[in-house]
Length: 304
Image (cartoon, rainbow, N blue to C red; front, side):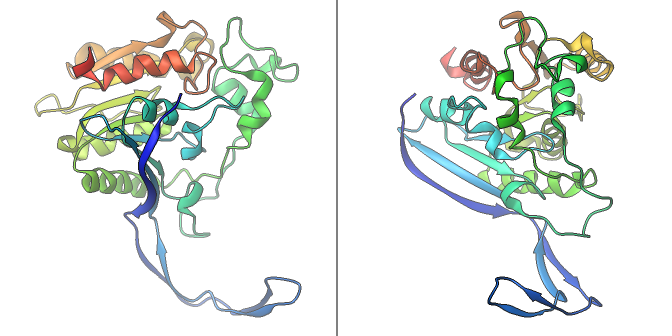
């Protein structure tokens, strides 16, 4: 999977300045030899998203691709699979796409601010990921016994779990604002978004449909449907296997089917029809290259 880069770098989008007053000053030690009076009062730049971009050489014509991570994850999820294979980021670059990878507000390299958001952060356990992402039944966790035919590399579950980051459940609004700001900066883009990030992306696209050429959502955990009375970009809901094994996914998948049946802009793409055993993490499954071929075809209509 070779490619050359014309350029790469990073930038921040969205955010604002927040002032803190009334906090106590404390003497803190930052190293064994250095301490100082830390004053937390003052102005902070908060609620920005971090974006890393890559421009291949040669670059394919058309809008760049924006990759939006899922809940409790960061943009690292697109880079390398848990068992060390190149991730979808590399596959898209090899196909000539300019790619912008977001770490949304309070995730990864975007940073976070204690006390800024309502509630406490939560962190996903390996047990939750095992069941929620449909690698296997709950009773199979200890022995790493997956569902029959599961394509996720379950022997590398711990490596996968090292990507988990704390998340707040009350940051939807600034995350949507950050994605809208990114789309405005790019002018127009293809968006590929996963899970909770797909719900964020659908809301952002509803706010700025003219900024999106194609929206590909990977098992969205929520969905703002396109306005049927207004122009909307082609929208795809891509889903995996074992959806009937969990009540949450049964409900979500029923909603996806209803949306695709009632909205002309939305098309349901069951990956399991081609790759049985696809998990909630198709970009990490053992057939990730084949899954990317299907997803990439949705944003490369000129190549069909």
